[in-house]
Image 1 (cartoon, rainbow, N blue to C red):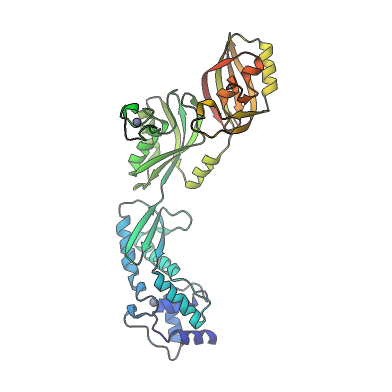
Image 2 (spheres, rainbow, N blue to C red):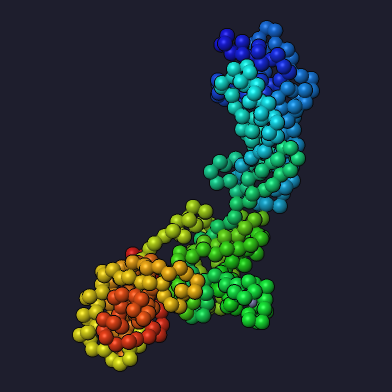
Length: 406
Ligand SMILES: [Zn+2]
Ligand SMILES: [Zn+2]
C-alpha cells in the first residue's frame, strides 16, 4: 500500500478531481467507482490536498466529469421517440485530454489505470439506467448513444427491427424483392411507365411496408433463405425470411395481427406464417444457409418418352453430381462461373403423353430449369440429353426447403 500512497503523493502534485485520482488505481480493487476510490485515497493520506473547489480545475479532465448529467440529458432527449429496452454508451473524448492523461501516467508511474473514455461510458450509462429504467447491454443493445463530448452532440445508432417468418408464394409473376427499374434506378422513366420498378409488386412489397408502418421506421429490407425464380411458386412449409426495418420507433409489435393484415392485403398472391421477432444473428444464419431444396417441375418433351427410359434416367441422376455454367438467362447479371451441385434425389411423379412431372431434391443453388433442358449443353448431365429428347419447362414450384422436403 505504501507504494500506492507514494504514487498518489506524486500524482497530487497537480490538482486532480476524485475521478481522475481514482482512475490511477482503477484495477486495484473492484466494487468501487473511481470517484469513491479517489475519496478513499485522499482520506487515507495524512497530507493530501483537498479536491479542487471547481472540477474544471482538475489538471486532467478539466471538468469533464462534471458534465455527466448534461450528457445523460442529451441522450434522453434524442431517444424520446424510440421504444427500446437495452442500450449502450460510447463517447468520443478530446484527443488532447487523452494525450495529457497518458503522459501523466508515464510521468507518475501509474500502471493500474483505466482510460477516461471507459469511465465516461460507464458513468453516463449508470445515470441513464437510473433515469430510463432500462439496462446497458454490451452484446445486443437496441440503441447505442454515441456522445461527442467535445461538441455536446449525441448520435443515435438504432438497431434495426428484425422479424422472422415463412412465406408461400402462389403467384407466377412475383419477384421476391423490390426490383428497381434498370433504366432509371427507381426515379421513373418511359421504360417502366413511371413506376420506377420492373414489377408492380414483390413479396417484399406485400410484407415490408406493413411491418414498417407498425414499427414506424424509415426503410425496409427483405432477406430470404435463398430465392425462387419469379415464375416459380413457393409452396410446402414456405421459405424462411427476415424482414428488416431501419430506425424503428416501435418494437413491441402485435405480430399475430400484423400477420393477418399482411395476408389479407396480399389477396392470395402470397401467404405468410410464423411471424416472430428475430435478430441480426438469425438473419446471418438465414443468408448463409445452404439447405437442399425440393422442387416439382412440369416438363414437356418434344414427344412422349417411354417409361423404361425415364426409369433409367431416375436411376442414373439420383445422387449424381452435376456441373452448371452460369445460365444464359442470368448471364447478364451474374459472373460466368461453373457450379458443382448434387441432384440428391429425383422421382417421376406423373406422365401424361409428352408431359412429365418430376420431383427433384437438389443442393441449394442448383439451376433446376437448366438441369431439365440442359441450357445448350451448359448443364451436364441433364435430363433432355439423357433421354435423348429436347424438352421445355412448363412449371416450377419449390415444395420444400431443408432435408425433410414436403
Ligand atoms: Zn478530473
Ligand atoms: Zn424506369
